[in-house]
Length: 334
Image 1 (cartoon, rainbow, N blue to C red):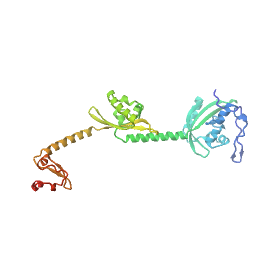
Image 2 (cartoon, rainbow, N blue to C red):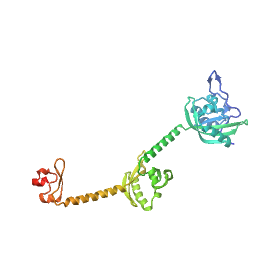
Image 3 (cartoon, rainbow, N blue to C red):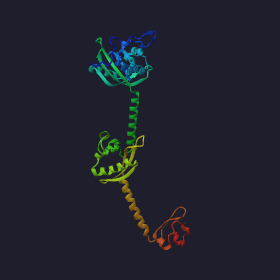
């Protein structure tokens, strides 16, 4: 049977009281703690350690526990479980049942209460054992994880923020590490593959494309990671034209740790651009072959466009005021 620590045969002396004051049990006899190494481990442990009874009575507390609760040992003994655990924490009853059934709990989280009333999150491990008098006792090890909980919450907020920003874009977006594993992606990217975002996390992006397509993308991705410079390229997939932009992700030291991949379907834009080019070419052909003199001028009367017929007959006068051109007035009037 594991006995983390226990007195020889007596609990610590009861707190001395004077009126409503509670005094420290620092004057307990040396025999209250086991001698030697076990004593040193308990006294100097960075973890709070309590010796308790299954009913919640506290028999002893090490210095780390006293610092954690902001109490002297005698105050902790008087407070007991009811005064140390936040009574609104719904997890306590389940942990007590588990400990009673299995004899131990490990790494459970509870919300505890300091002397000044402030609450803090702690990680608790506890073992039930039988003491030297044959009585059931429990040892509890406590670690204040307030900072860890704050960091975990900050991480969750950061992850939610990143997810919101990614999903604000209608275009597919994916974040990869330098080995190609998917760190994050938005719903639009997941829908492209017919999956939920969670199903694709930590997958290798190379597995989502055919070898030829993957080779093209990997070539650009490696160049971005190598140079730390963003790049853009276009890719034709079936009847679609996709524009990709790869941007490096940097750590606090400026080292490239991955890349962000932005994709956009530009098929319609390409179609419009092609139609515009064809329309411009048609208009240019009509303009060049009109059997008359054509000028175009700006608001100041400066010639900004002329057809070849004007240039052949009068010479080119682009950039000059049309009124100053050596052209018969009747032609200018038309």
